[in-house]
Image (tube, rainbow, N blue to C red; front, top):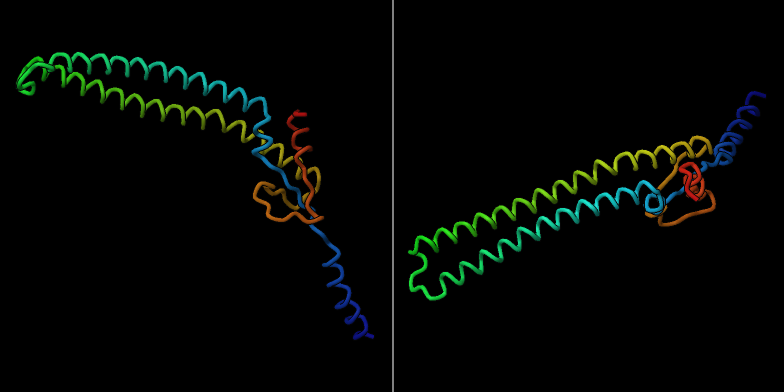
Length: 170
Protein backbone atom coordinates (compact mmCIF):
# COMPACT_ATOMS: atom_id res chain seq x y z
CA UNK A 1 0.00 0.00 0.00
CA UNK A 2 2.79 2.38 0.94
CA UNK A 3 4.52 1.65 -2.36
CA UNK A 4 1.35 2.50 -4.30
CA UNK A 5 0.97 5.84 -2.53
CA UNK A 6 4.63 6.64 -3.08
CA UNK A 7 4.32 5.73 -6.76
CA UNK A 8 1.20 7.89 -7.12
CA UNK A 9 3.00 10.84 -5.50
CA UNK A 10 6.06 10.38 -7.71
CA UNK A 11 3.87 10.36 -10.81
CA UNK A 12 1.66 13.27 -9.69
CA UNK A 13 4.45 15.69 -8.64
CA UNK A 14 5.99 16.13 -12.12
CA UNK A 15 2.51 16.52 -13.60
CA UNK A 16 1.69 19.27 -11.10
CA UNK A 17 4.96 21.03 -11.81
CA UNK A 18 4.30 20.93 -15.55
CA UNK A 19 0.77 22.22 -15.04
CA UNK A 20 2.08 25.38 -13.38
CA UNK A 21 2.82 28.02 -15.98
CA UNK A 22 4.38 31.32 -15.32
CA UNK A 23 2.49 34.31 -16.59
CA UNK A 24 4.91 36.73 -18.23
CA UNK A 25 4.28 40.18 -19.58
CA UNK A 26 6.18 42.14 -22.19
CA UNK A 27 6.32 45.89 -22.61
CA UNK A 28 8.37 48.29 -24.71
CA UNK A 29 9.34 51.03 -22.21
CA UNK A 30 10.94 53.22 -24.87
CA UNK A 31 7.75 53.29 -26.92
CA UNK A 32 5.70 54.25 -23.86
CA UNK A 33 8.28 56.79 -22.72
CA UNK A 34 8.09 58.55 -26.08
CA UNK A 35 4.33 59.12 -25.74
CA UNK A 36 4.39 60.30 -22.14
CA UNK A 37 3.51 64.02 -21.84
CA UNK A 38 6.28 64.49 -19.28
CA UNK A 39 8.81 63.25 -21.82
CA UNK A 40 7.61 65.79 -24.39
CA UNK A 41 7.90 68.54 -21.77
CA UNK A 42 11.42 67.39 -20.91
CA UNK A 43 12.45 67.40 -24.56
CA UNK A 44 11.04 70.91 -24.97
CA UNK A 45 12.90 72.17 -21.89
CA UNK A 46 16.17 70.65 -23.09
CA UNK A 47 15.63 72.07 -26.57
CA UNK A 48 15.15 75.57 -25.16
CA UNK A 49 18.27 75.23 -23.03
CA UNK A 50 20.23 73.93 -26.01
CA UNK A 51 19.08 76.87 -28.15
CA UNK A 52 20.17 79.27 -25.40
CA UNK A 53 23.63 77.68 -25.31
CA UNK A 54 23.84 77.66 -29.11
CA UNK A 55 23.10 81.40 -29.14
CA UNK A 56 25.84 82.06 -26.59
CA UNK A 57 28.26 79.84 -28.52
CA UNK A 58 27.47 81.67 -31.75
CA UNK A 59 28.19 85.01 -30.08
CA UNK A 60 31.57 83.69 -28.93
CA UNK A 61 32.25 82.25 -32.38
CA UNK A 62 31.37 85.56 -34.06
CA UNK A 63 33.65 87.44 -31.66
CA UNK A 64 36.44 84.95 -32.39
CA UNK A 65 35.99 85.35 -36.16
CA UNK A 66 36.03 89.13 -35.85
CA UNK A 67 39.23 89.11 -33.77
CA UNK A 68 40.82 86.62 -36.16
CA UNK A 69 40.07 88.93 -39.11
CA UNK A 70 41.51 91.88 -37.18
CA UNK A 71 44.68 89.92 -36.51
CA UNK A 72 44.96 88.87 -40.14
CA UNK A 73 44.48 92.46 -41.30
CA UNK A 74 47.07 93.69 -38.80
CA UNK A 75 49.70 91.13 -39.76
CA UNK A 76 48.97 91.11 -43.51
CA UNK A 77 51.79 93.43 -44.50
CA UNK A 78 54.14 92.78 -41.56
CA UNK A 79 57.46 91.16 -42.26
CA UNK A 80 57.82 89.73 -38.75
CA UNK A 81 54.40 89.67 -36.97
CA UNK A 82 55.62 87.34 -34.20
CA UNK A 83 57.93 90.09 -32.93
CA UNK A 84 55.33 92.86 -33.05
CA UNK A 85 53.89 93.56 -29.55
CA UNK A 86 50.47 94.58 -30.92
CA UNK A 87 50.21 91.45 -33.07
CA UNK A 88 51.37 89.27 -30.18
CA UNK A 89 48.76 90.83 -27.88
CA UNK A 90 46.02 90.23 -30.49
CA UNK A 91 47.19 86.63 -30.97
CA UNK A 92 47.11 86.06 -27.20
CA UNK A 93 43.64 87.60 -27.04
CA UNK A 94 42.51 85.29 -29.84
CA UNK A 95 43.97 82.26 -28.07
CA UNK A 96 42.24 83.22 -24.80
CA UNK A 97 38.95 83.65 -26.63
CA UNK A 98 39.35 80.25 -28.26
CA UNK A 99 40.01 78.66 -24.86
CA UNK A 100 36.97 80.43 -23.43
CA UNK A 101 34.87 79.07 -26.30
CA UNK A 102 36.14 75.52 -25.72
CA UNK A 103 35.46 75.73 -21.98
CA UNK A 104 31.99 77.13 -22.62
CA UNK A 105 31.13 74.32 -25.03
CA UNK A 106 32.33 71.68 -22.56
CA UNK A 107 30.42 73.25 -19.67
CA UNK A 108 27.26 73.63 -21.76
CA UNK A 109 27.42 69.98 -22.84
CA UNK A 110 27.88 68.83 -19.25
CA UNK A 111 25.00 71.00 -18.07
CA UNK A 112 22.69 69.67 -20.80
CA UNK A 113 23.56 66.11 -19.83
CA UNK A 114 23.01 66.85 -16.13
CA UNK A 115 19.68 68.54 -16.86
CA UNK A 116 18.58 65.56 -18.95
CA UNK A 117 19.43 63.13 -16.17
CA UNK A 118 17.67 65.30 -13.58
CA UNK A 119 14.52 65.69 -15.68
CA UNK A 120 14.49 62.07 -16.84
CA UNK A 121 14.76 60.41 -13.41
CA UNK A 122 11.18 61.11 -12.22
CA UNK A 123 9.77 60.16 -15.64
CA UNK A 124 11.58 56.82 -15.59
CA UNK A 125 10.48 56.26 -12.01
CA UNK A 126 6.85 56.94 -12.94
CA UNK A 127 7.10 54.45 -15.82
CA UNK A 128 8.71 51.78 -13.64
CA UNK A 129 6.05 52.28 -10.97
CA UNK A 130 3.31 51.75 -13.58
CA UNK A 131 5.03 48.62 -14.91
CA UNK A 132 5.46 47.25 -11.38
CA UNK A 133 1.83 47.98 -10.53
CA UNK A 134 0.57 46.26 -13.68
CA UNK A 135 2.79 43.28 -12.91
CA UNK A 136 1.55 42.98 -9.34
CA UNK A 137 -2.12 43.51 -10.19
CA UNK A 138 -2.00 41.08 -13.10
CA UNK A 139 -0.21 38.35 -11.19
CA UNK A 140 2.70 38.26 -13.61
CA UNK A 141 5.84 36.36 -12.66
CA UNK A 142 7.75 39.06 -14.51
CA UNK A 143 7.51 41.74 -17.14
CA UNK A 144 10.27 41.88 -19.70
CA UNK A 145 11.37 44.44 -22.28
CA UNK A 146 9.77 43.47 -25.59
CA UNK A 147 12.35 45.49 -27.52
CA UNK A 148 15.01 42.90 -26.63
CA UNK A 149 12.70 39.90 -26.87
CA UNK A 150 13.92 37.58 -29.60
CA UNK A 151 10.98 35.20 -29.47
CA UNK A 152 7.54 35.61 -27.97
CA UNK A 153 5.57 32.45 -27.30
CA UNK A 154 1.95 32.06 -26.27
CA UNK A 155 2.67 32.50 -22.56
CA UNK A 156 3.89 36.09 -22.86
CA UNK A 157 1.27 38.83 -22.90
CA UNK A 158 1.92 42.33 -24.25
CA UNK A 159 0.98 44.59 -21.33
CA UNK A 160 1.84 47.90 -23.02
CA UNK A 161 -1.81 48.97 -23.16
CA UNK A 162 -2.24 48.25 -19.45
CA UNK A 163 0.86 50.28 -18.57
CA UNK A 164 -0.32 53.15 -20.76
CA UNK A 165 -3.70 53.02 -19.01
CA UNK A 166 -1.98 53.21 -15.60
CA UNK A 167 -0.14 56.30 -16.85
CA UNK A 168 -3.30 57.85 -18.27
CA UNK A 169 -2.09 57.60 -21.86
CA UNK A 170 -4.41 56.52 -24.65
